[in-house]
Length: 276
Image 1 (cartoon, helix red, strand yellow):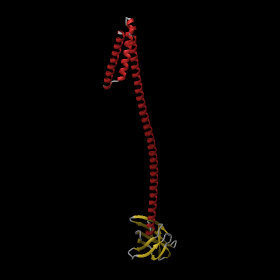
Image 2 (cartoon, rainbow, N blue to C red):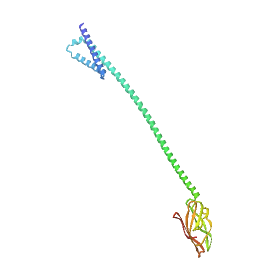
Image 3 (cartoon, rainbow, N blue to C red):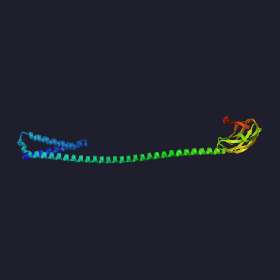
Image 4 (cartoon, rainbow, N blue to C red):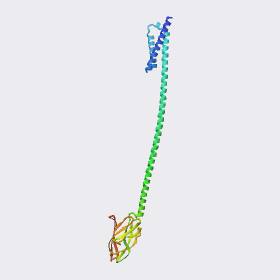
């Protein structure tokens, strides 16, 4: 009866010790220390110490008398260690599953971001293509506008030239009617356009109106000149020119010869030596 009472006391002491250890472990857990790990270490240490104690005890009969209590203590420590290990495993699995879920969510977010990035790159490439195409169209449009502007400018210049005569001018030269006393004159056009409102004045004479002159169609005049040098002013819609006309009769050839020099604004625009 005494041995049983002693065993019960031992068991009660072990249980109280484990409760104290559990309370201490809970307190450490509240202080950010892993309580389950502490319990597992305590259970393993208790089993180790009890095993060493039983193995090294000198009185084997005493150990045999208390083997029930010792077995119960071993069982309690083993069950406690197993429970602690199970709780740790469950918690570790829960943490692992949580990490895996977070990792899966992160991977899903990364995949979504990569998809969005790919779509954005595709849109940027499309925008670059559209910008290049618009720039090419703009360049082509500007070139066409410049061409049209140049054509319109050329057309406007041509129209003005057609109306005013451009850079052409009129001058007086020998006509077909002549005798030893004098030679008739005719008006010529140097240029590609008709000359408007042509008038001429020989020396200090009066201004004579000719009208419009056409290139390659000389206009015979009523003026007849004898040999000598004459200064002639010819006016037209595109401006005046000054002409120096020198005439002489060649008895050997029985014909009139002339030398012509036409200037505009001090610049010589036509010069012909003696000849018919």
